[in-house]
Image (cartoon, rainbow, N blue to C red; front, side, top):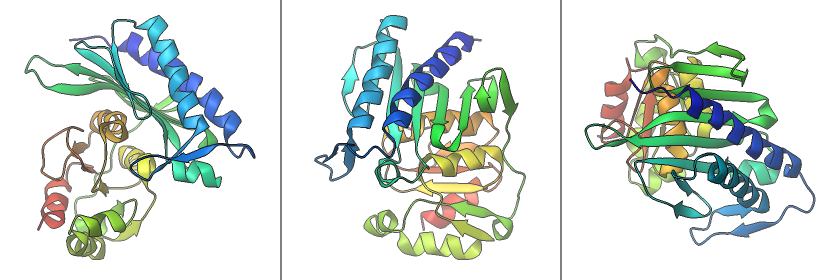
Length: 265
């Protein structure tokens, strides 16, 4: 069995590096904001945070490939780090503290399928951090030495479930708004916590289901391994495990098949 302790320690160093950049620029009056070709915003903090993480990786893991939201793919090999320097950029630029840096390590397994084996989600404005490594469990805290193991809930009925999402517009654009609304009406509680926070609350057992209809690998890789190591399931809307698709459903596992069925009718 592979030992990911060193990679997990490095992931914390990477997150610390990103946090030092993002916190310093949060609510800065001179924050520079641009619009990318996909019409989403990017700030100078997004770019600087990714550059910092890449710099640390270049020194610590020069043979590993790196893929980030802002600067694409660099290098080749069976291992690659995936970076979302600021997940929740729209929150970040408006001064909302719900944003995080997402960092994951992906490896090609014996079956030839790439999967996330280490993941860390650092939300410094919330003073929260979550992490996991394959077969080592999922944790939340401020550091490896100050952490609590986390687990998904045991809620077994949709009628008792708490469901978190990001927005309605994506479901409407995908032609799945009616199915989405049907699920929300069936659940005990729905809230649009959004982005990484939905998935981390699934991992902590505070939320039972989370789903989004349009995502990229860097949005999902770290979240996926944390949810899975907390005892939950993370798949695409097609039910295929992992973050390899363009959408996501995360759950405590017990409710997963029913959530998929309702969202894909």
